[in-house]
Image 1 (spheres, rainbow, N blue to C red):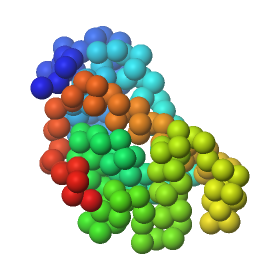
Image 2: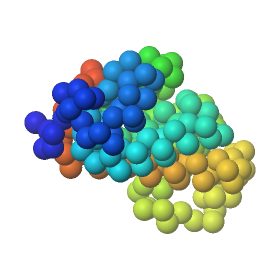
Image 3: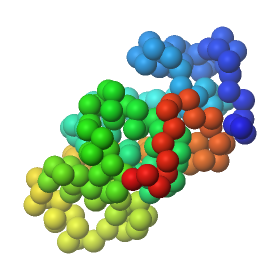
Length: 182
């Protein structure tokens, strides 16, 4: 059971959160529970929506972004995010079941995506303390400074939602997946 209010409608949410919730509904067709939960603090909802929206305009392709989200959700043990990103990975980003499983294990069959996902997991495991050699390896794999910054930002954005969902036990409103099924 979710530990904070999940507003039953956009109209029931705080007034300052309503425009963001409307935008989410227009984009996704509904308002997932993670956003209903965050709407208890319009500032938190706006912060996440702004970061997520800005990163969506970044240089990293959507399939790499989705793989990072899956890997970080797995690493952080967030059942909500595993379910949400398995669903979006399958239905929106069109990753194969094998690629979703590989991302959850911290890799990919695609060499470039594999480097990005492994680097993202390393960032999470080491709390940002990566070596010069690891950065050099990423540059050798074809990632420029813009993409490296975005990978770090995606780790942070996904960790943010992982922690929010775990602290508040957000009710999963996507098809559930097993945490250990990777």
